[in-house]
Length: 333
Image (cartoon, rainbow, N blue to C red; front, side):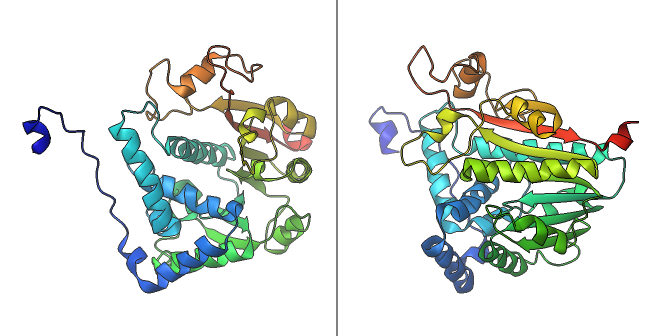
């Protein structure tokens, strides 16, 4: 109470971090220690995403996220969110991850519904610590394929088993198949087919937080492979793209970008492209304030042709949330 005695107002309180009990066990601590000491930035991004989902739990229902993220990434993001809260920041750390997650959730559900209860596959490239197979009810009749590095999938499986996530009552999807493959190499698609993926079955492709880690040639090969499946079945692509300024940060490991995904994807054979930005009506979810000088509102008010904000000289770094779809010709007749 000393602050009040000195006439100073106390800053608003912020909830303390509550770690999942499982993270405090020696075995799980040791496993996350290996992650932190041996994984590269691309692999570690999976833990960062999981931390965002765990700490935005008032918006994102992902019970496994905390265990998958690990103590270090939970504490790191919690500290940032606490500081943002105490400083009355217009944008709170992790909000992009929360909005992005909810956007993909909603679009996956809509895509599956559009297939009218026909058999559906959901392929997640660079699946990382994604736990949608255990939390999205719309996946109950869908076969889920998670493609990522072997070491990532092995650790993820161990963590989910430790959390009890492999019990039949907790696996919501019809099935989940983990495919150990590096999507930077062309062999990943063959490995996916060998694991049970059917080219003739309706498919939702989920590329969340992965394309910009690839080189331009690698990203284009992945997109071309997906576009090539459109001749065989109804296909929906859900992906997020960075624009050029977003990849130009100092020490950035981001490579691939597209300023105009709605032009790129049709050139590959993926049509019906719809693009959203953070803060748009379908990419808001009540998590963005209406302040016109909020970062995301400022970006949305500027023409996308601008790469530098003329008012303050800052780069216009944008994240595009993109859905595209295509159907075999015979389905259109």
